[in-house]
Length: 178
Image (cartoon, rainbow, N blue to C red):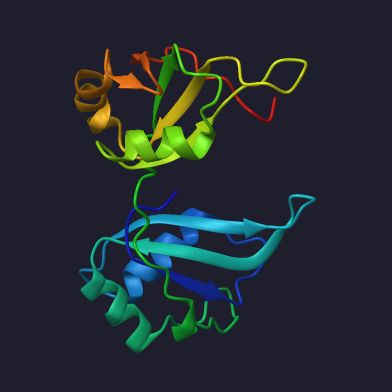
């Protein structure tokens, strides 16, 4: 995963290595810092002749786009301006909570609405028994792990549907697709 401004480069010879691409780009653009080169490969593992070149700053990306890259190994390289990749943000960690002592009349929407009064909810999973009735407990995925202490403090012991909730951090979240 790249963590900086990225530029797509096409026209590479299939035998060119990532190290060669990095050295070539840095030699062609003085004071340009290439932080990563990713060579694209097809499903069978053969190089496609394309690379993603990640540089340190947006200004370096703009300079690379404006001036291009000279030929490498006798092949002209193209740097299409439409292929600028935005900076990739690390994925947000979801926090998983286990809530028990729910009324069997509660729906996923009721639970989500109640918890959303304290913190944003990414998902609610309300397991059901063999007869299709709710089990009385649920798994909650919060959008931000930093909200966990606040949700537990605010909702543990609070009545919902006439029953006090028991809210705790889920140590081993269940994968609903498994």
